[in-house]
Length: 420
Image (tube, rainbow, N blue to C red; front, side, top):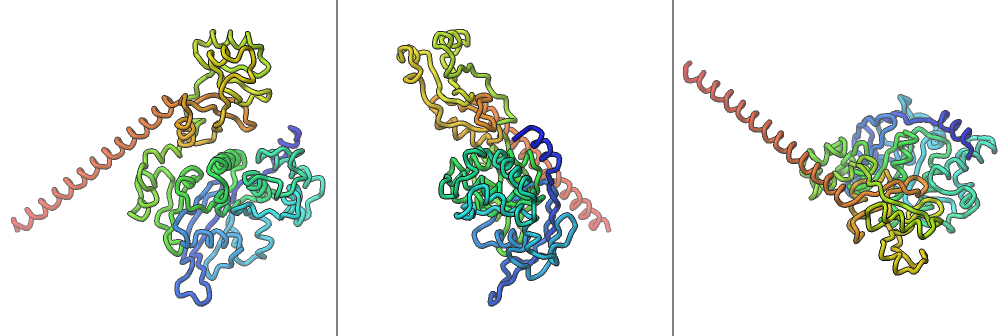
């Protein structure tokens, strides 16, 4: 896609819209209790709000009422101040992006046809649709030339989910609803998809409402989290940090679970910590020059990059000596990388599975950016633990002051009664 097209697309992109739920209720015939009971909530334009709660609590039902895939029994829904409970639901759904688990792609349509579905329905010109499909494939990290004509069965689970997100964004809606979109993929792919969504949101600033049962995913993705009880009653609606450090009650504490300080690693991104500069060479670098780089670096290891500057192998001095002049037999393949948008928890997991205690950081195209190591991550953990201790001491101090003040008032009151 040309720079002009990208600039034009960025200039005309629709940002997020506010969402208001007012006394939203859903009753199914024959059921004694409502599935969703009198839910009120305000979601700011451009923020990512996560609905998390136990199975059957009504979180998906609440989500689907926003675009009226499920019709509310009572209450109001306003998007950017417009009451959508009285407008045509089909038109509403064309203005609200929707992504679900297992992507939900039409198997008889190509990737391009799946993405183009809504723009075609609302009458976009063919040239605009074609440009939008290419733009979105690029946006979600898929090569348009390679994936344009493929069918869903020819894609991996992660690729299908990327196409599903692209389809949801096709008509550039201000609101994106996501119902456990990454629940059916393996953990590694899921982490990468989460990172991709974070990156996309940094670029697009949509209003995202996301349903999950995974509290760690909620912490990683959400600007705010709504912890829901039965019938979508809100137990706590706050920032991830506030919920981790000050859960409203035992129900919310159950979701937080043990290790709140470690869970807070999900609040810090790799881009927020200092990365190590690591000596690098490419597969095209002459062998003698590689030896020179290792000697000059003062380290025993360098990182070999492929022709597209993606991490390929870790090379040690001894590996090169034993390889007898051939890079093909030298070094250890790079199995794990993390992106700049990955959390420190993701990075810690990658580092712990690596014998040398480090992981390469990559950019949008997989290109090498830097390295984070165990020392950097442990310093971050210690800082979080110190912050927790300080907050606990502050809270204890405030509690003791409040108790002392209460005792003082009680003594004054008691003394007054005695004198009377």
